[in-house]
Image: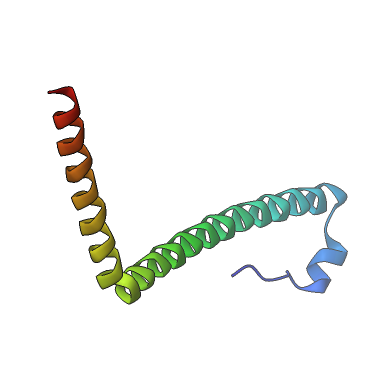
Length: 86
């Protein structure tokens, strides 16, 4: 981690050296912020995945039953449509 240089160094630095240190510090801060944002976005994506998994685990049997019901109704509709067109 970056640390603040000793105060004696900062006081004795030339204006040019202080400007360079300022720009370097701002650049490093921006890079850290960018990495932190990427890490936060990745953490959020992992939490979303975990949430979907938890939902599926808690409602698995109901979802399977519903899928079977939908498939059965779709089959009935197809049979009905075939009879009407025949």
